[in-house]
Length: 267
Image (cartoon, rainbow, N blue to C red; front, side):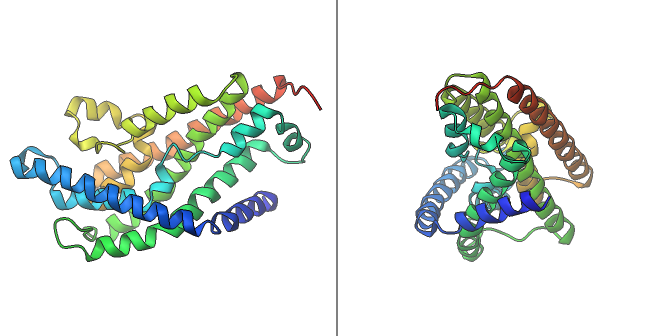
């Protein structure tokens, strides 16, 4: 365990060095967040009663999404891992006395947390100061706040476990570009990154909430914004733990299968 904690620490400290990139990301996320809220507010002015969430709750959902984008953005995968598989540098990793899946998992978690640490605080600070209903409101109570923090980190782990599948499947392809485009597009839509899941038709929403994509950002953001009740929250947390276990088990199994047949040519 110590060696994986060392990989986590090194990657985390490395990620904290990219402050200029974080500043550019903060500006971009502010622009995107304001744009989304303005679009939603136009629809709310037409008929606010037609929406399952209030504009204030939707604004909180969007600002939380932007603050912790690094946790949930499927496109924030590590190109370094793809490159090591494609160009054969994976051979150096295989020489180390480590479990490569665990190492990549620790690195990926650290990379996302370091990016979020640099970006979340300025976004949350400004979002809280914005006037209602465009700003970020406080959660309903301490229970919602505590569960939102818990599910935030569970969602991060589910996202990393899902991205690990993309890395491992690269062993079976010539180029990872097709896999990345397919998986990223699927996650962005079905996880509630484009449209919050409560805005889908109820029959569709019930199906989407059972999929692993809903166990990513959807749960934490909806709990914080107050659009989940007690029973729904319990079910959502159980599904997060379930999908985390399934994705990790699937990733480890595929990784073992891939490493048994991996061939590195050249020298």
